[in-house]
Image 1 (spheres, one colour):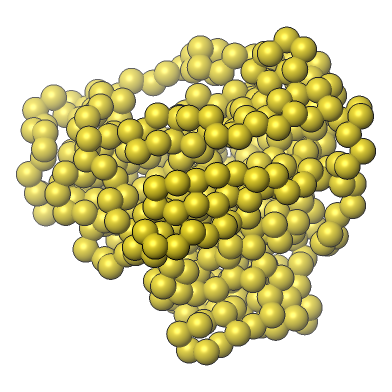
Image 2: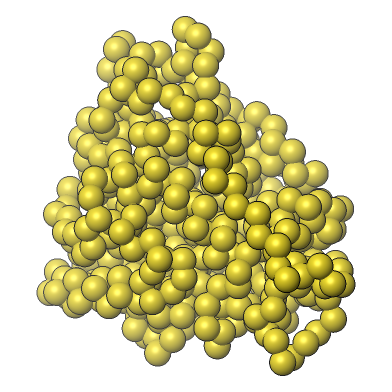
Length: 423
């Protein structure tokens, strides 16, 4: 018999309540910065502050205690030193640090954090998770909105938005925004049709279908000069609004963009908790980074499965559960550190993962059982390596696109996140 422990009181225990309107206005402040370094080193530098019109996040759950992501942003009230807001996230820079190239070359990536717009002076702190899994403060910046006249008020890319699925106020729901990449002005109707199709796809999968009434889905009509996206290996270069490209980190199927400023500029046109970029291509590919963005090839025959897989990364904080595919990463999961992703373990701290969901007689590690591919266990192989990293099931959509959906521990993790954003 499986043992399921439900934390019914987690909004009260884990997330201290802060009265939103005591500290914040009903809009958004974006801090743009540059993240630079190599395999061993990193440093941050300030770019700009931007006022944006929509705060799509919860106004009740402001403190994030999930401990997901390679980075954290924390916002403190300057006068009282009270923690007002926090979020975990990841970025392309972390992935770059695990590539062979990072051993010999420094690179700089643009990044942003988005917070509720403060009424009074605050301190923004950025943290980075070290190789032992511990967060270290790397950067801080003070902002007084009453005296700082360098906060940019203009929107660089103003576009119309439209709603695909409406469950209510942004503050009471998870707000997902679909962004068009490589759709021309003449293809905006095509983009709208794609948005409706993938919205319907989302609600075919647990736990999204069970939480349909807690989710809003938006689209933004931002068109590109050219149709498609860059494919460097084929000498294809297109002028697109967010400058996406295949061959990210020299992986052909990895279609991403390091022009995060343009991603945020487009996403600013709608309430936004999670960004999904529909890439107007038939070529197989996609990518997803937690609390950053997801991309996928919107017209590949397996686009529906690619979408659900990549959204598992970008919203659900899920890791890849496969190990047989070629990737650019080196030592992505140190075996003496418990991964922060909820669907992998090195057994360093398995109690914090899905141990409570195992049958009492399930051995750890769990032997292969081909007849029960969805049975929850501790199966060796995942996170790009065959040994030392374990996944919750024999098959899931985070391992193979042929799987019917997420495994049970992943469903639980995503469900907790949806509830966090919709409380």
